[in-house]
Image 1 (cartoon, rainbow, N blue to C red):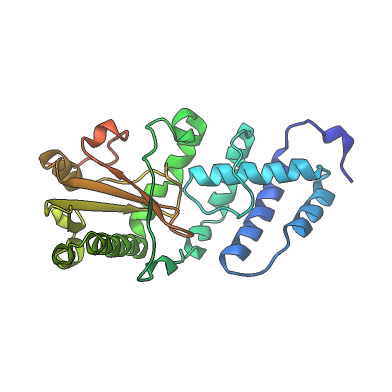
Image 2 (image 1 turned 45 degrees about the horizontal axis):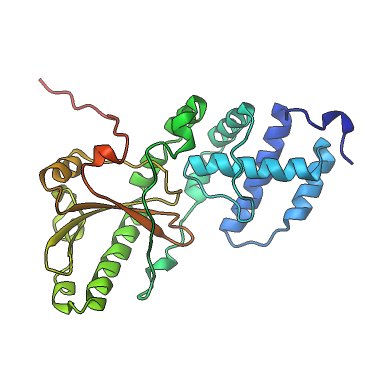
Length: 278
């Protein structure tokens, strides 16, 4: 039964720590394909902390909102609600710091690599769409648990995204009655290495080159990503043919948007590493 004195009050640190433990227990079960019942988890949590069902459910959705900004997977059915108290950010930081194995446990499903896999395109987000860009505390959390660095380290994820785009480009040219061009599409990063500044050589229907750099994340459309100096320089040298394909939500149903140079007009670029020389 709910504690009437808690209705309408902020959650305390101990309560937030308990609901995060509960949320991640459900999330791990979901990611591993193990059955669980949300209502059972909610009832047990309500009994421990004395919060109402509505309050518990809303806090679960708040957690989804924070994890989305961090490019982490979330529980299906708990739609992100971004109107959360600042103490939740500190609680998420405590939990992720205490459980670094979470990212190691997470293996993205790559079932999207079927021959007929669809790849849906959306308009790119605006530069100010990311919540973390407007919230200094969230921005600090994003820097600490850097989703761009995590995605960059995940070589299997990057290769899977490139392979998906490679197949989609070939199928697109086939559908446009250009099988000759489809046969010329090349996976440059695999054939020549990563130094070219792009991953895939493709073509427009008229035969013009498309130099495609693929950036893949299991996060949302506003999850930040790394851009190398080679990629940035090439986008400036050949803006007419360079395209950046951003794949997102790769764990479930990959979608993408495309960015055309100048990239500075589309994203906020900030230096992350400096090269020191004499």
